[in-house]
Length: 120
Image 1: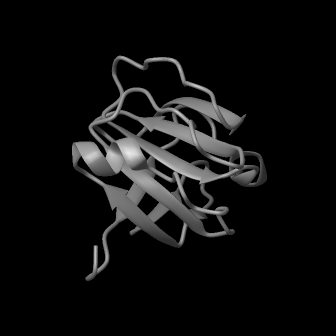
Image 2 (image 1 turned 90 degrees about the vertical axis):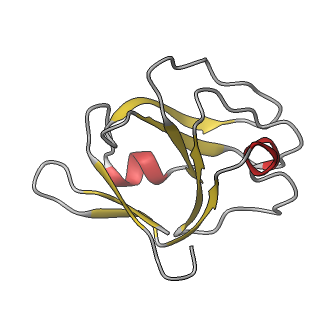
């Protein structure tokens, strides 16, 4: 899975090689147990309106997306052992390495294209 921000006549790859958490257990587990997120890695959580970082060891950037794939809320460097706000209109969430949102200039309203690979 890949996630690409194509706003403002620019293309920024947010996730080059990501995983998908589509069921309840995989969403609950999320990135727990991962030692870190490397550049280009991330996770897409489907059907999610709130996330937690319990059990994690590193901060992450968070994007909440609506049904059209547009960013409706973002969090920069959410620290371990925290809970995000509940975002009512969110249909999915992207979890990214801390700093990606700032590096790519990703903002609320940006359209995010999710590209599924053969192994997703």
